[in-house]
Structure formats: C-alpha cells, structure tokens
Length: 339
Image (cartoon, rainbow, N blue to C red; front, side):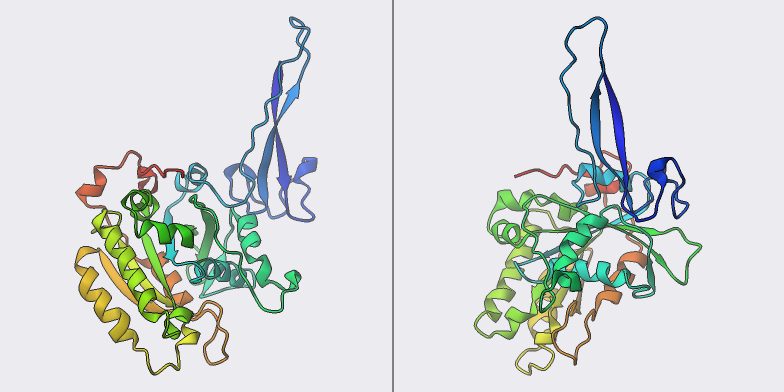
C-alpha cells in the first residue's frame, strides 16, 4: 500500500512554515499566491500491506517547481486570475529574452514604470534567465541566456500599479519563441500552423534586431525576414483580425544616430500599408532594453509596453475565434503541439 506525501519547500530564508509555523509574509500558501513556495515533488512512501508479502512499486511524480511553466501548468494562473498572455517573436539574438529579463531585474529593485512586483510562480525560471546579467555571474558585461527550446514555455509575473493599490494584481504570462523556430516557421506551412500560441496571445510583440539593421550588409534581409514571417502568419491564419501586433525595433541604441536609416520610411510605412488592414491593431515602437550607450537609457520603451499590456481593453473575440473556444478561459482554447 502506498501513501502520497507532498514535499513542501519554501525558498525564502527565515520562513518556518516547514516546521508547522506560519508563512513569514502572512500569505496563504494553499492558494498558490506565494512566490517563494513550491511543491518540489510528490514522494511515494511504501507501507507494508498485510495481504501482500511484497510492497507495491514506487512511483515518482514530478510537480511544478517554480521554473518556466509548460502549457498545462499555466492553468494554475488562468483558472484563478484575470491574465494577459504576451508572446515575443523575433530572429535569434534579437533581444526577446533580454526584454523579459530586464522587466524582472528592474522589478526586484523596487517600483518600475510605476509597477510593483506582486509575485511570480516562475521566479526560478526568471532567475535562470537573468543570472548572466547579474554581478554574481562575474561576467564583464551583462548577458542573457538565449531561448533554445522549441517547446512553448511560459513565465509568470503578477504586478500592482503603485497608484492603484486597491485594485487586484494584474497577472501576465510571457512566452518567447526561439529564433530557430521563427526561422523555420516563416518558410513552412506546417511549422507555422503549430504556432497556435500566437493565435491565443492577447498581445504579440515582434522584435526587429536594430543591431542587424545598423549593418548595411544585413539591413535589407532583416526587414524582409520580418515581412515574410508576418505574411506567412496571416496566410495560415495564425495572425488575423483578433491579433494585436506591435512591431518593435529593438536595440535602438545602435540606430539612434544613424542618419542612413528612417524608422518611418523603412518600417512604419511599408509594414503598415501591407499588413494593418488584416490585423486588429498594428503599432510600432522603438526599444532599448539593455542599452550599450549612455545617450540612450536602458529600459527605453519598456514602460510604454507594460502600460499598454495592463490597461488596454482587449475586448471580445470575433465569432471565427469564438467557435474554437473549448474553455471559459480564452487562453486555453487551443492545444499547443509538441515537436
């Protein structure tokens, strides 16, 4: 006979909940609201059975540990809170992971963009991505671990606006598609159709690498690759009239003094004319999440994005998408395939 025992781990120093005491911060951990408290694993304990000489085989179940969430694990958030899904798209090394890491790093220091950190069920996942950008890593310059997995992973943040403290925290789920998957999907109908996470997203932010734009040898190809991906996503109905797409020229610090490049002429006008009529919204911005020049401050454009994700009324889905809904949570209306 077996008995299942949940091994509870609190990762905050000084908390005595393991010894039967209360949470250090007075949080009800049974409601999955504490960013420091996780179920590390389920342990199967063998017990003697009078009717059998041999104990049953042990089974070990691995449960959520605070790292990056898989799609099924996101139901912990979406079934309990009003949640926004943000998906970040772009070529390899365009700054996708750096963008998400900078939000987390700055929120640990205090209010950022007038928002306060209100917890994360993927705090370990964020810290794994951010480590190379911290002093503890002993790197000479900040770096960010690239997104390598072809699977969809999700990071969670709960935030409160410091001017609206009586309003419940806003919960966000972030997913950034690997550059390799971006590269392959823009040329493949099958692979593009697997990117249903884009169809479920409340907001899609498409990063165009400013460092590559600054290089005249790669400028035209970089812009064309972005157009090709968006066109393919529209053709395969991954982008449609429910898509809120924002094209962000990342690493603006590489272009801020480049007189040979016009953001209006090269990005806003051609992309707007070609795609805006087929999307719910198409907007443009410049960002420098981790600037390498003093003339452009790090974090440029991040507050604008965060405020939009929080305050925009995402509205109702069109009938075409409503027909696909199989849950009362819009985010869970699609099955994300594995490759």
